[in-house]
Image 1: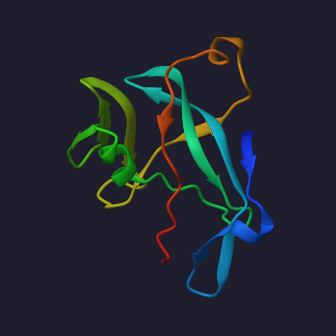
Image 2: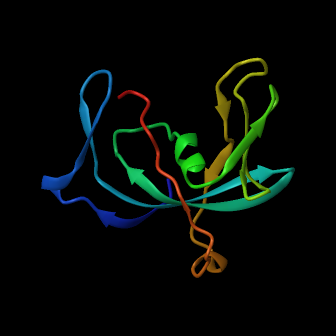
Length: 131
């Protein structure tokens, strides 16, 4: 994972996260750059802040956080699209056609020069569904 750290949590002020088995902690937050396809075009999306929890092996995007930021969602059985204003931002598809879990097929990437001063920053965190 190409995680760009912004801050590290003080050991005494870490945020606990309960899983089905035990409690793990948010160790910090930062930025992740995702490369993914949007309408058949390869794009890079900057997601900030991303919570850093070393024990988490699957990344989860919180649709609730996107909606709280004023984004909207539209979809059907083939895809779910998050929109920023009226522009598509992220599009997820079912893991398997007919299933109800939607997946963003993406990979992380390193910092590219065009993103060093980009004003487009979306506030997103990875929410654990095991609370």
